[in-house]
Image (cartoon, rainbow, N blue to C red; front, side):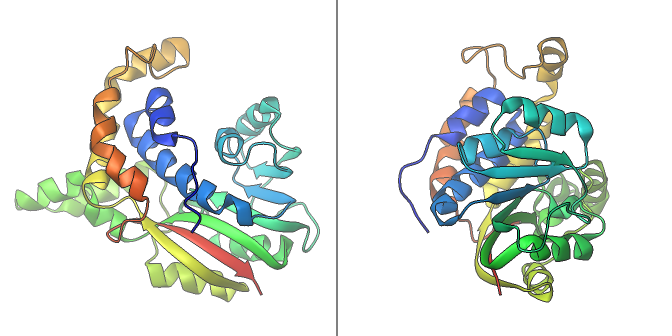
Length: 264
């Protein structure tokens, strides 16, 4: 793991995003930048969304993006940080076999149906020896939520809360660590390293962050921004609490996995 200096993603995302999204994106961006030097070009970003994440973690890279949502893909194209973008499903990637030296897939696979076909397509377009980096949510997520733990302490079923939140988040694939490794190996990848992240107190703050951000919704709907300025930002008080987990990045109790894989 390369621990060389990288931008302060925690402060940046706390200034730009609602609390729960800022926590996850900051941790993922830090992990990606630790390994970015290992990625050879050209790179494919599967589930590129609006392009903001790749723009931050892989600036000036020769990178192509695909996403099934037309509006997000249009926004990604407007950022001019991709070599090319296309509206496409991960289960039918419009590129030739072994077209990419590296593939990334950030915070996508837990939402994907069909999962196995999508992973097989990612494997198909990855060159032999090429790297695949994915961040995924595991089965630990549901029982680590603050809402789950509160209900359990009250003698109620915490899964009522977890099932509701997972439904809202469109979480279809919450595999165990072993399950994700098997899923990768089944389509021809060797898992070189897995780094757990987002656990313990940080995970509880993440869950609370969904509700902490509610007062910001009006601002976002009126201005397209979650915070009016760096000074008028209710996330500022959390930076000191979150800083140790961000600097460490790895968390043995993590509910998510950063997976570094190599195509056989």
